[in-house]
Every structure is written in structure tokens, then in C-alpha cells.
Length: 331
Ligand code: HEC
Ligand code: HEC
Image (tube, helix red, strand yellow):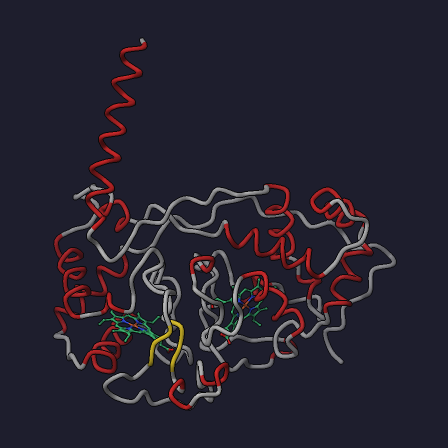
């Protein structure tokens, strides 16, 4: 019995050794499963992520625009916010967003906690104020109890709200994609065309910007390195953060994890299909015109990056009470 355990342990050690060697040389690294630091906080963050009462209308939650049943996006060109306002920019996925060097297309928020306060108070998104959002939560006894359990405080603060949402978002990682299985040594996990697509992706230079665990998210890069990108969108990327003209049209390189689910593409959402996104990237960033066959192979490879989607019980939200401020959907 002991011998057998020892043998199995040795074997798995060995497997681990080989598997880590197999992707050591690759520009893309497999995603590790999330290990939640504080389960109570994650559960509370999940409730807040799904709770539309954090918006003025009582109708829009984080999940409205980052639908976790649809790859963490809304699958529309630019998001719809309070009173059906059309937003200025495409909603990036919240999946694997903890791996980004900064949040938003222009990287104006450092981390998930800093980001999470933004949409609640953004007049074009949830259109609330932090104070009113906290007042709503505070009026609901079950929320007060939860916050007390997690943070040990009688009063709820926006800081706690954003801490909890960020803790939940950190769990939204998507391991076990077919490509990750291949990286870890399962050579059957992807087929020949997909493998050739990966080789094209590496050899053409895509991986110079899209690399690492998230296959992106690690740097800011110019959109339109070799040919200008034509758009009607007013977004100027990093320039809005640094004020520098050289940062015009410099955006955070988006993650390509789950890219098959997060259409439409680019910051203006103007690119409807993955085929077109790959063609545009070839032309604008690398000066390459891919043949139809090459394009199809790269697209096939990109689809192997779809990982295990968040899988959890939908949170049951506590009801409002008589004292809870009522939603204002129209004003
Ligand atoms: C009305 C739609 C809408 C709502 C509601 C909304 N978001 Fe977003 N979210 C967006 C858009 C659009 C962006 C991109 C904005 C930009 O880059 O300037 C974004 C960006 C993000 C990002 C950055 C991802 C990245 O890769 O840079 C995160 C994380 C995020 N939202 C989380 C949340 C959370 C948490 C909530 C709820 C508190 C929320 N969002 C509510 C539309 C929305
Ligand atoms: C010089 C850096 C760079 C190179 C090289 C590059 N990309 Fe990109 N990629 C970006 C940036 C920046 C964006 C965001 C564009 C925007 O803001 O609209 C992007 C966007 C994308 C998107 C859309 C992602 C989304 O969520 O909207 C896809 C797909 C993509 N790239 C694939 C590729 C492929 C395939 C290649 C190789 C043919 C490639 N990229 C080469 C920097 C690069």
C-alpha cells in the first residue's frame, strides 16, 4: 500500500516535471485554477456582481454587460447603460481580467478593486453614486449580516463593496482549455490544423503582443503599427491617461482567452468576426496578408483557447425591505 502510494507520487512528480518542461519554451502559459482566498468574501462579491440594485435604475448589474453566461461580455458593439444610453466603447471580458497589467482599454484603473467602483458611479453605465449604492445595501438586513461576517464591521463602505467584487472576479479564470491541455503534454488535445494555426500565430509575430497566461493583457501597444486603423470611435487609448500624443491609439493588448465567445472585436466593437479580426491584425500590426487557408488555421487555433467557464450556483439575492430606497429607472 505504502509502496503503491509512493510509486503514484513519483509518477505524478515525473508527469509534472515533463509537463512543465513541455511549455517552458512556449510564449503562452496554461491557466491555473483559482484558489479563493476568502470564500465568504467571494460569495458576497458574487452577489454584488449580480445585484442590479447597485444601479440607479435597479435594472443594470455588472452581469448585464459582463454576462457570465456569454464569456463575460455583452456581445454587442458598445454597451448599453442607464436609460438605454449607448456607451462609447466595447465591453472587455471580465474572465481572466485579474491577469491584466491594468484595467480598461486604456489601463486607467490599476486593479480590479479600483475598477469596480467606476461603473457604479458612471452616469452612462449604472448611473448611481457610491453613497446611494451603500445606502441600498445597508438597508437590507441580510446584506448587513453578510458584510459583518466578512469584514467584521457594522457599517458597509464602498471599499468593502469593491473588495468583495474584486475577490469574486479573481475567481473568474478559465483553465483547462484544449490548448492548455496541449501545453501540458496532451498532444491529442488539438488537431493538425489548430497546431499549424498556433505555429503561424507564433511565427508571424502575433505572440510578440499576445503572450503569457492570458495571451494578452501584459502590455500596451499601438493599434495600427504598419497601417492606420480607421474608426468613427473617439477613444484615443493611453493618450487619455498620459496626455502624450505618441500614446494616441495605444491600447491594452486584449486577452485572447475565450476569444471565440467575446465578439464583436476591437475597442470600438467594429469587427464582427474572428476571421476579420485576424486579417486586420495581420495587415495593421504585422504587414501580412494571410491567405484564406492561413486565416482559417489561426482562427481554429484561437478557438482552442476557450476554457472552462465559471460554474457556480446562481446567488439568491436578499429582498429589499420597506426602508430600501426605491429604484429610479426613468428620471
Ligand atoms: C453598462 C455596461 C457595463 C456595466 C453595467 C459594467 N461594465 Fe464593466 N465595462 C464596461 C465597458 C464598456 C468597459 C470598458 C471601458 C473602457 O475600457 O473604457 C468595462 C470594463 C470593465 C473591466 C476591465 C476589463 C479589462 O480587460 O480592462 C472590468 C474588470 C469590469 N468592467 C468589471 C465590471 C464590474 C465589476 C461591474 C459592476 C460593478 C461592471 N463592470 C459594470 C461595461 C460595463
Ligand atoms: C503590435 C502588437 C500586436 C500584434 C503584433 C498583434 N496584436 Fe492583436 N491586438 C493588439 C491590440 C493593441 C489589440 C486591441 C485593438 C483595439 O484596441 O481595438 C489587438 C486585438 C486583437 C484581437 C481582438 C481582441 C478583442 O477582444 O477585441 C484579436 C482577435 C487579435 N488581436 C489577434 C491577433 C492576431 C491573430 C495577431 C497576429 C496575426 C495579432 N493579434 C497581432 C496588439 C497586437
